[in-house]
Amino acid sequence: MSLRHRLPRLSSVAGEMLDLEKHFAFYGAYHSNPTNVLIHTLFVWPIFYTSLLLFHFTPPLLDLPSWLGGGVLAVDLGLAFAVAFGLFYVLMDRRAGSLAAILCVLCWAGSGCLASRLGFSLAWKVVLVAQLFCWTGQFLGHGLFEKRAPALLDNLVQALLTAPFFVLLEVMKNLCGYEPYPGFHAGVNAKIEGARKQWQTSKEKKTP
Image (cartoon, rainbow, N blue to C red; front, top):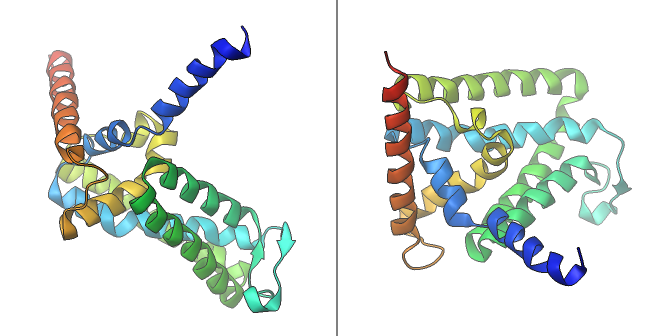
């Protein structure tokens, strides 16, 4: 296949990957109960933060000068992940994505400072406890309140990659009515309603 014929297909794939309305509707279909939404609002970013913590104990890719935090921070795999997540969010929505990208980098910097204070022998225990606590809370939120399995069981990569951004979008919507573009939430709500009806119908068919 020639490059000229491949370009439209690649453009279409990229468009699907960056379809904010589609991704947000997928996430929202699994998070409609207010208590479950609150649990995820409290726990998703701590999971991201503590996930970066152990990366600070891996060999640095590049040392930073002292005026940029050198000696405590270094360009490492944690920063690479934070930047990758942030860039993906910016590509989906420039305004909210930029805020999310800043938060990702701040999580990396904050986790680096904490890592330097704790040391590896204590840091991995903190990470383990925090991850277990936050993940248990989220699974309980789905089991007790949402009455539906988490999104990660249907699409692990999408759920893990987009969850921090969508929690932020949810907070921005509730605090200031933020919309990436006019009609965004109306479109998302329609998709969520359709997805939940489809899930409910499938659930009823499986019930003897």
